[in-house]
Each structure stands twice: as structure tokens, then as C-alpha cells.
Image (cartoon, rainbow, N blue to C red):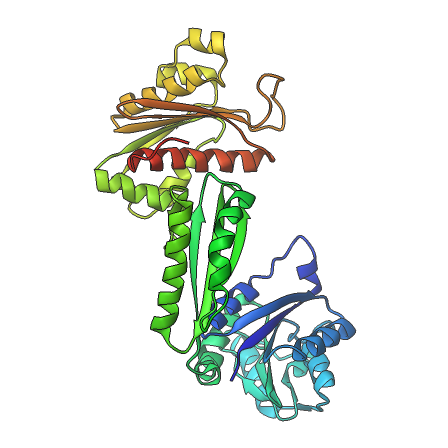
Length: 420
């Protein structure tokens, strides 16, 4: 039975800023669905020695080793040779693969270059996985109680080959054991604050017949707790995870906004729809990003009226009705201006609630009194709540924190929770 896997992404381009390894994300998802835990992911350049070291190391730990890339026809495509060398296998040319590649070129009115014969080299005893979307076939090699699978690098080719040829085998190889995951999403607390509350709860769940592994992750504007457990009894695993989620969510309330993997904007959209409310947005420093997040949610036309990107003061005055005297006296980044923006957009667009955001996202424009990261957010319904925040990070991070905080302020309003 396969229980653990390691993934090796091959290609020197993946070690530059110009290419990202997305294959491993696809593979991890599919392997997890089959109950296989991915223990490591490695990126290796086009070096036979480095690749051989990575394969040998992975085989010493994992039941299943998957490589992606390096199956092309050029001199820097070394995966076949490196894996065969590690396993002590000879490479034989498969005439049927040569014929298949030649026919593919012929259909395009071309003659197959001799260099493509390299793609027909097969480690002795390997199973060939046909490529429905390209020329490079995949390879499956059984090495004692271990398995090595070589996939091409292009995501379209890899996914097609996986689904057509490996997924049916995987179900039998993995057995009845399945891995399940749950995610708790939290806003308004730092990672250390979350862990101080959560650790005494999730630590006991890590032992017993169905241990739950918990990982805490920080991202812009929110914290996530990832819980995972595996077993042969799907119902028992689900119940164990649900118990852990329930205990953690209760301890971390009201900062938990999702236990079903919904985004903050989707949660807020559902709350708006439940109340029959519509929201209007007035954004300065966030430049329409809040509107973008809300309208990314399918069906958002039911609860988003529209918005105004009021970057310039004259737009705040003309389109939102912010008094010029208020801007002159208090500055554009101030609570009176944010309040006027929220109330102005609510009234002018006929919404139930308006949100106003104004701030200094940086990297320039800050002062001693109002440093970069100063953001003022107002939420105006029957009453108006205004808060001033000091966010850290670069320009994009300040904007992300701003939109997340605005959404959380609206979430709390809709749930009748105390404001932050």
C-alpha cells in the first residue's frame, strides 16, 4: 500500500523568478484525495547528479516518488537517465513510441527530428504511460516496495496523463485509507495569539487511534488552522475532525469567520443576502480592491450595488459629498472623511450599508502623525462605525489588510457582534 509520497519538480527554469512549479499543487491534491500524504517537495535543476541524489534520497523515505519534467528530447532533459541510473536499469528504445511520435509530427505535415528518439527510451521493466496531449510518454517503475512515476512537466500534459493512466491505478494502490482536511479561517488575531489559544486544544487531538495533525498558517489579513486526519473509516475520520474544528472554533470565536473553506468575501456576501441588504463601496487607497473581492463571488450582483474609486479629493467632494472644509481641516486620511465617504456612497447609490476606506498605502506620503500604513475605515448602516488602523508591510500588503479589515467590520455588523 502507498502511504507517503515525495514530488521532485525538474527544470532549471523553476529555480528562477520566471517559472513557478504548479504541477506539485495538482499532484498533492490528487494524492491527498487518495489518502497519500506528501512529505516533501523538491525542485531540482537540469543536473543529472543533483536529480539522481534527489531521487535516491526520496526513495529512502517515501513509498511513491513522482518526478515532473525533464522528459523532453533535448540534452538537458535528463530525468529518464537519472532515474534509470539510480535504479540500475538499462534504457531500451521502444519502437512503438518512436512510431507514435513520428505519426504526431506527420499529422502536422512534418518529419520527426532524430532527437525525438530520446523520448522513446524506456527503463527496462517500466510501464509506459501514453501522453494524450504531447509527445513525451510517462513512465511507471516498480522498485521493490517502492514506486517511481515520471510525468512530463507541462501541466496540461501531466493532468491528462494522470487522469487517464495513473488515477485508476492509484485507487487500488492506496487501499481504503483516505486523508481528510478541514480549514478554520480567522481574522483579527495575530498568529501567536491564535496559537496560544489553539495549542492546548489541538495538542490532545494529535494522539489516539485517529490522530489529527494541525498546522497554523499566516497570510495577508488572516490566520488559518489546517486540520488533517487519515483512516479507513471515512465517517470516523470526519467525526474526529469535526470535533477538533468545533472545539477550536468555539475557543477562537468571534474571530473565526469560516470552517467550510469559504473566503471572507463569500461569507460576507452570504450574510448580506440573508439580510436582504446591498452594499456600496467608496475606496481611496485600496483603489477598487474591495469591490473586486466582493464581486469575485458568484451571485454578488444580488448584494453589491456598486462603488466609487475616489482617489482624488475632488472626486470625494463631487461624487461622495465629502465637505471640502472637512478635508482641509482634517486631511483626506481622517475619520470624518471616511465617515462622509461611507455615508455618501450609501445614500447616493441607495444601499443599505456603505463602506469608506481612505489611507496611506505607501511607500511614500506618510508623516509623523500619519505614517505609511495609516488606514481609516468606516461602515455606515443605520449608524456609522469608524476605526483608524496602522497596518505594516508594503503597499500591496497594506491594501490587502485594509480590504480584509473592512470586510470583517461588515461581518461583525451583520452578525451583531461587538466591533473590533
